[in-house]
Length: 193
Image (cartoon, rainbow, N blue to C red; front, top):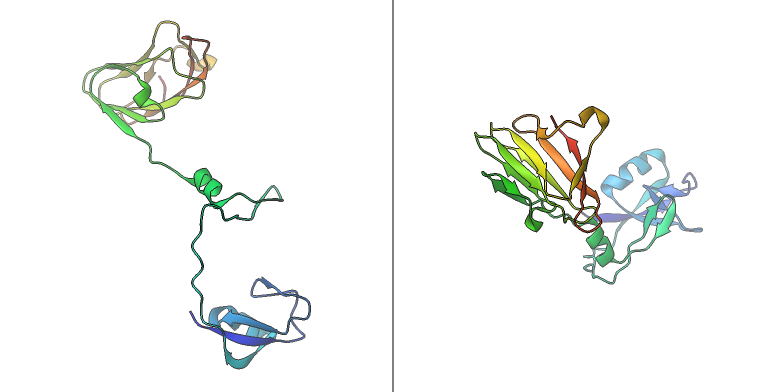
């Protein structure tokens, strides 16, 4: 996109096309799109001089710093820290047709239990606090949960008798709230019945 140099008139405020002006600045380089509104307002006039050619920005490297605002405060993470923060990985989908006891491979995964017959998902007693899994009822058969010896489940009073996923294509998220050895305390939220 080409640019052009424009003279700044005395009608200009502290910003032109969203660009903060420096004290004493008399010229500004804008694209035609940026300049259209400002020309109509009389804050700039065309000089007829072409602007500098567009420069390809240097590639971002891990040590580069990025200026961000959080709650009004400036933070300066490195590009590597920012990339690690925003990196998103696709959730694994682990399909099962038989009853199962969840394993480490199921942590943070979407477990899809598909069968026409009823199946049981057993929640282990050794997962760490914060570990979670989403279980989806993929088939017509009922999917219920059981607890490995030592594990317990905490549910709201209105759902204290719930032990299953309510319908086909519904999901329940299970999360470990605490664990003292092999005594995981599980919570469940979602389409329980």
